[in-house]
Image 1 (cartoon, one colour):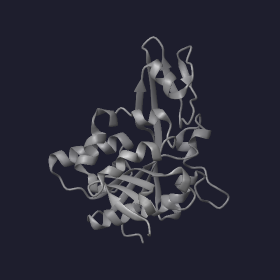
Image 2: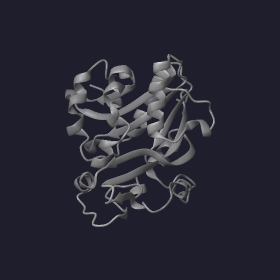
Image 3: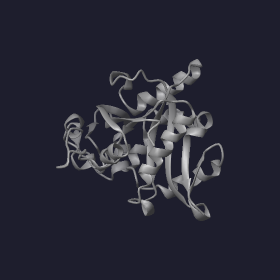
Image 4: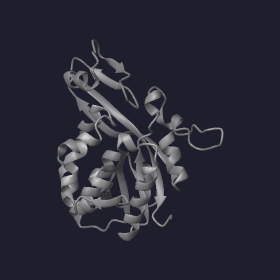
Length: 250
């Protein structure tokens, strides 16, 4: 049987297996974002279930997932906003106000570890474009998490986003994949997603010790975490790069 894309409203039971299937793809602290922890995550599936997608293979094997939220965008780089957190808040605010969206914002694409390298990330990008087009949206915007930025956590995202290969394509593999799939790089943002926690939280999430207040390089981090022992607080802002895809790209 050929792989099939289904959304949350069709088969919500599949999402109960996500923790096991996608374990370790993102660092533990990425599962504790301040915005999603306020209840948006559950509401995302309840309200926008048709935009939470999973690629299912034979015997119900979960191959990949893509998540999205309808939003409104004026077509300008400035209108893209600060990044992931702001996009989530804007999508819910638009829904609450009863206003019409014109754009689908991708909140994340993940491929099961055993199927990485098979082009499924590109396939899910295409699926998001199809879903957007069917909904009457003109674009898919992606606050992309560069997959190799963790190797250069001290480099500003503005510099990193400008790096290219000898062939002129983006240096970062995920950004390069999106450009090859028809996307256009737009503005980088250094404060896309906020993650805060106590010092104990961060020591648990990273399996590190933080003896003093300072900025620390952490496993998988795209930037450093600021540890303030006096305030018992760790603050991490994850950067991203906005990528724009036209929904009518085939």
